[in-house]
Amino acid sequence: MLKSSGLVLALALCGIHAGRAETIQLKDRAAITGKILVEKPDEVVVDVGYTVLVVPRKDILSISRDSRSKAGSAAHPGEAASTPNADHFYYTPSPSSAPQAVRDLVGQIGEAVVQVRTPSGLGSGFIINPDGFLVTNFHVIQGETQISVQVYHRQDGQLVPTTYRRVRIVAINKFGDLALLRIEDKDAPKFKYVVLGSTDALAVGERVFAIGSPMGLERTVTEGILSTKTRELAGELYLQTTAQINPGNSGGPLFDLNGDVVGVTNMKILFGEGLGFAIPVEAVKHFLDHRDAFAYSNDNPGSAYRYLPPPTRTRKPVQP
Image (tube, rainbow, N blue to C red; front, side, top):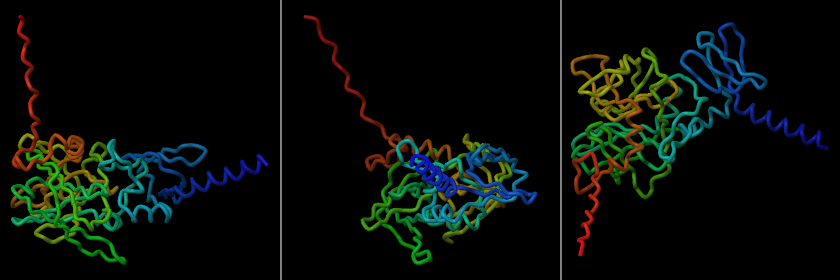
């Protein structure tokens, strides 16, 4: 009886492992099936059950996942392959995330990229959690309080635009050109969101792509490479990319081929081609982690910081 129970348990564990398995197709026509533990630019670490293999990237032809894993990823961008940060406000990628084709990624994460409109213009943005919090550039909403956000929801296999008009400014950092907004319409559903990645493992020359609304053309995808990670402009470091960035892209996400946000597009060189720039995602995380310090105040709307009242000075007691 105990032996039979042990067999059932073993089969159950095998079933769990199989449901999470990936297949690595090698260039010599061999294949490895297992659970990917770590992915690096030059190698992939995979658990095959009885040992752990380190596979060089140069020997890998492709990486595929089972249909259940793909369905979970497509159903909710970031949810199947991400972990929340300390206060569950935004999400970071899990170690098992793997590069995919831009075509596939756009279908998964496109719903989380939005268009931000004000009376004076428009820009782009991206949703970071199901509760409708989104990031854009400060200059997109600068001097404005009447803000609307257009979101594309998938219905019956089609993307249908919905405009939300109750949008609150939560926090701003005008020096870092970042703003945090929230959609507060009563009928708003739980939103699809993107995952905030890292530029640490991103190498110069790697493929990246942007999604936004250049010149008002919503849901435009442009692809390029990362030209440099340390372009200094006005004392700040930016990501430089050949992905086309134009007015209207501001505030939109720059993705790597894992589908993770690595930057926020915010400017380009005028009269130049392939010279776009993005705020590194590490600056975005710092802004979100310290959003209380950047909280927007109606009493002081132009300030990037909220100043707390000073402590009252205690009067020194007088000796009798």
